Amino acid sequence: MNLLSIEESSAQQLELLIDLAVEMKATRGAHKTQPLAGQTWAIIFTKASTRTRVSFEVGIRELGGNVMFLSKNDIQLGRGEPIKDTARVLGRMVHGAVIRTFAQQDVVDFAHFSGIPTINALTDDEHPCQILADLLTIREKCGGWRGKKIVFIGDGDNNMSRSWMWAAKYLGFELVIAAPAACLPPEDFMTRLNAPNVSLTSNPAEAVKDADVINTDVWLSMGQEGQAEKEALFGDYQVNAELLSHCAPGHIVLHCLPAYREKEITEEILELHADTIFQQAENRLHAQKAVLARTDPYDSLRS
Ligand code: CP
Ligand code: NVA
Image: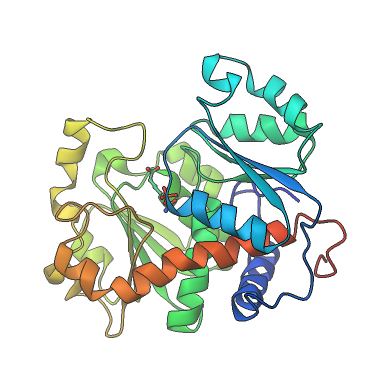
């Protein structure tokens, strides 16, 4: 099984992965099977990472596999060797790949040309592994997402907001994207999404009214560093005490991290919700172990 995007997943797959993540978390250190025993996985990253890299390295090892980390500068990819050639070589040597890069098409091409299980560890279009960890956190903290109002505030047209919109489409919860007009998803994306339970607004206070989950992310994603004009659009979109005063009682705050204090979130709010936010970070490990276990054709948990 590949995990290339939330767009290409389904309600059944997402629910199954979250159920398995709960089991992975509960049985950490005492797994009955080691589904990646005898396998070697490659982690190929062309962007920086703390959480994703460490959680995949630890997760693969905990499931019995070996792992090699390849930054683009370690391999010929960084000198222009095409992704399809890299894929055809690695596909003959390793058992699976975890890829973080810019173009979604590169991950799609890698999966196609390598023929081995391929996991999207973040592209410009999607961050599916993060959304699985977020859903697990919502399940733990709020008892699930059914009937909940979830708000994503920040860049409405980045990898996190897009993955969230696909998750909302399949799982059916109310999702509001609050972003400056220039950072809302374009019409063609919304047409493709076709999800009446996802709405867009440029009014953050209205968006967070009675919300159960507030989710934010950096204003400038990797690859957009230095875009001061874009960053200047987000002044009214900071997650701070005043904004959160409009939320439902007992609301939670999520941030995929890394966080830029006093930009998308204040230090005060990040620390107030640190327990949830670092639980969310830990959940990357458990959620990705569920994904990894499902790549093994002999896994008894595979449906
Ligand atoms: N949230 C997340 O993907 O973090 P890293 O960039 O540190 O992997
Ligand atoms: N949208 C952010 C997510 C980081 C985990 C980025 O792409 O940089």
